[in-house]
Length: 160
Image (tube, rainbow, N blue to C red; front, side, top):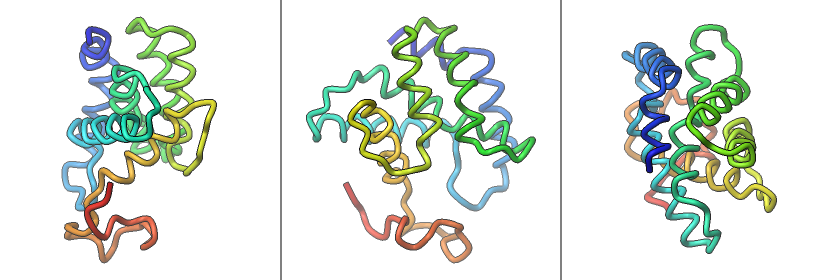
């Protein structure tokens, strides 16, 4: 997965992750680090297999690595990280050799990953939303009393 390594080594990716890591150094809630991104990727891949979607594994991992990069903008300006992440993801994907069609699908998923949707035209979007939510272990969180997630959105037990 050479293109994935290009993403990981991309200067803009590293800069965004550094901003996020610094901003979240004392955060008591879920982090948006590489570990979270890889959890999302693995869960999204499992969902794809279980649902018979046959999504491209490399594209799933690329999408997961990029999905929260907009937080680097949000922490500086307050802009919504979903929207802010679109242009960042687009630039990195194009620089790393992804096609225009691959880039379009993944950027759409990054921008829309805050809202549940069954998107038959772009199943990456649906899988990203579900995997992002399933990656959180709310039932084991020490900060659940003050978390902004609605109770209905939280994972109260091990779910798949």
